[in-house]
Image (cartoon, rainbow, N blue to C red; front, side, top):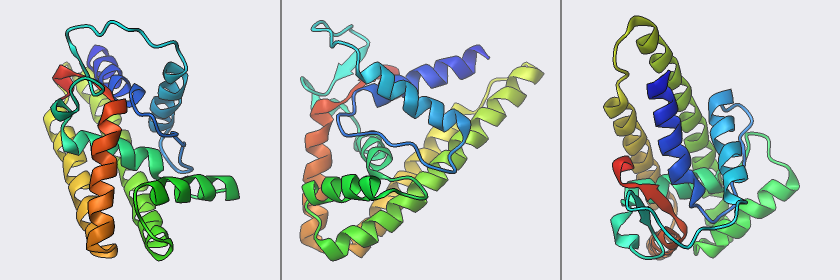
Length: 191
């Protein structure tokens, strides 16, 4: 249980720094929804001007935030719910327009991000279940595999997006993600 709480705390620390809106996805696991909702709550707290030494502040050192984590956070933030409302779709389109995608590319990207959101929720659910099993049997959960699976999911989504949009839009998306690093904070151990 302690390991599960540590992992959840690590992800919440990473999620707290995201500046874009965070939506919950219909169909996500309860644990994934709790992570996102806790991140929304934590984000509304007043910011502290002093950053502890174990936190990477993207506003000061965006280059220290790995691309895989930055893309993951942007994808989580932009992916809409499984059954989006008109407001959800408008919000998602606005984010994707800000990222440099054109109207036709936005609809393709939205579909790919929906798949990402579903797979992300499944991975979180599977990992949380494996942590419970490991805790019950006195073993260590396999965090390394989980993080590797998340990185693979991010990379496959990046590749799918690059194939679905123009090279120019892909460059704009890359610039957008890099600029969003300035709004992120993460623990050094999350890297």
